[in-house]
Length: 244
Image (cartoon, rainbow, N blue to C red; front, top):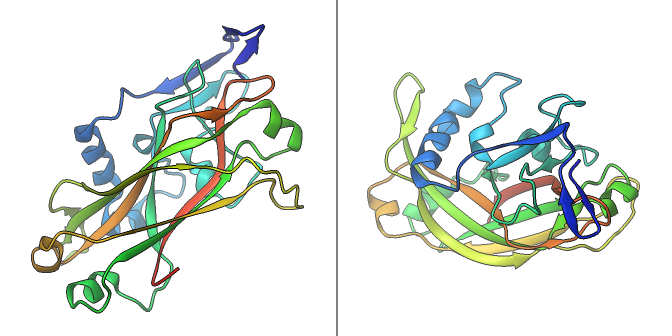
C-alpha cells in the first residue's frame, strides 16, 4: 500500500493505481449505459463495473482486482474498495445503484399516481478496511462525503433490452459525515446509516415510465490512517424504502 513517512509521501515502487479522469458527465452516461435497467441481469458473473469508480488501487504483488468496486457489495467486510491515487484520494468517487428492497411496491407507479409523495433512500456504509482492527487503523477512512443522487430514465424493448431514455439527472445532493466509531463486533468494525428524501420534477410522472436511481459518493475529507494514505470502504449499499 501507499506509505506516508515523516509527513512526506513515498509511493512504493510495486504499487500503482488505475484512475479515470475527473468525474465527467459524458463518461457517467457511458458508465450507466453498461448497467441500466435489465442489463444488470445479463452481465457476466465476474463483471466488474470499473466505469463506476474513479480509481482503484493496484499492487503488483496482489491480484489486479483485489481492491475493486465489486468489494463494496460482496457481503464481506474483509474486502474493500481502495481508491488508487497517490495521495489521500480527495475527490475520488464511486457510484452504486439504489435497490428496491420492497419488491411488492412499484415506486415509479405509486409516485406517478400520487400514492407516495417523495422518495426515501437509505445509504448504509461500512467504512475503512475492516479485515482487521490493525488494518482499519493503519488506512484512511472516509470522513466527509458528497452524496449525489441521480434519476436515470430508461426504456425497455419488447426483447427486454434497456437503454437510456434521457441523461441522468441530479435530484438530490448534500454532504454527510461517515462514522469512525469502532464497534469491534465479530462481523464488522464500523457502520453508519444515512437517510435522504427528495421529490422529482413533474416530467417523471408524465413523460418517463421507467427510471431508477444511482448514488455517487465523493471523498471530501478523511480520517487519517496511522501508516498508509489509502482511503477505503469495505461495504456500501443503498435502498429505497417506503418510510424511515
